[in-house]
Image (cartoon, rainbow, N blue to C red; front, side, top):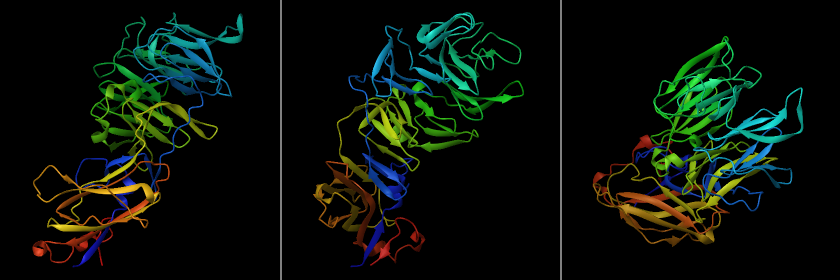
Length: 458
């Protein structure tokens, strides 16, 4: 009986499938591995350099600024020295209805959670405070309290105004003078927009190189400098579910919208749909936090129950549920919980190999390390109209990375697992298939040529 080899290489390089089309490239499950250009490599855990701080989702939050390193719980602010030792600077602060925002200005910063503003008090030119001290306020006559701020080219932009400020409210945006943080309206400098063109709250304002982006509950808009004013450009009708559901830097943002779709917004305001709603909707979106590891340019996405990591090559599940992270001196550090599941797992999309007739998956070849602990199994069905699959027993791969399922069906899902993920390095999976039902076979389809699942006659 003729045997055909179907390599599954491109599927590994995609990671979790971006959409739930059964014919799409990608995997239906991938846990504790990351995608790179050659295949799958082990997930590398974040380091927690600070002991004694428990995680109460979504806290604590870690902020690394130009001159300040901060750790924030819901009601306290700590400074962090070069040895990662904490000093409590402020405690008993009002708990905000949202996450902290950190806006860095080098010698000073603005830290806000919607209920309180924390800053560095240098005093005034006439009465300086030396050394400068941590201070807090709810607002003052020139500085409204907002739930979110960002630094756009030296100008402080606030959104979701909580204190009394002209006719502003939760759907408002305001901005300071250029070069200082005085918000008192002034022609061609400080000002405000009382209502964004979307119902609901402003969730977050965040800077890109070309614009400040206003992420609202029901839409997204860009504030683009135009002469001495702003030009407002609509980005998207669907908004974001939570302040934490946006992350990134001045080059690009990653966010998940209220429908669970993951997007990237580039510095040129190009909006690109990444997809993954099948997996993002497993999360409680109103508790979802995206944290950017700026050193590796990777994003952790979690609601405190399930977690994912997004690299430039694709998405996978991980056991670390990250509240915040960053790269410091070349090391990825952060705060996280764990779901305690450190298995490596993989499951392919539905495979019919381009032939609807019955066929036998005779051999499975896996290019993987750590062979002593790797097992394979198949989900399969013979009825094209059936929704439920049968599941074979798990069998270990032999020392050369091969197993012999010998199952005849019309559709298959190939699964792999290992109790440990640390040494998993997977380059390819090859399935070897024999045609059992030759009534529908008149030679294999040459249109597969060059495809990652193209059959190779043997």
